[in-house]
Image (spheres, rainbow, N blue to C red):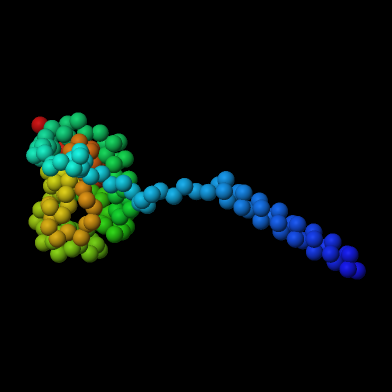
Length: 180
């Protein structure tokens, strides 16, 4: 009986050893590569090379000129990171930020059921036009001091125009964009 018990115990231990070995080998082969910094890379201004003092700010071309060359498809792609906080669908729910369907020419701070910061609640007399959206997308905290939006902004002027053109398409009847 001792020999039989030893054979069964040996078979069980050998099986366990093989399973553990296979698990370790598959863990090595199929290890996911974790990014150095988790999250999205948000667009931002390029830092000056070599740590030198930044050059004088270059004035962006007027939004009407950039809208003439705007690409709606590029604008939609540029909003990928925005989907973490906003919905873009008609009747979409408010998330961390308000839904953006029909945002173009809508009064600022007026989405029903969204708890705006005091800074945006006081701006309901202003509309989200091309110029306002462009400035807000460039630097939300500079355009609306005190806003709760933590997004740093989109540094590329043409990308902002693409996003404005895309946001205008999110409506039952898109409004005409300004022409140069």
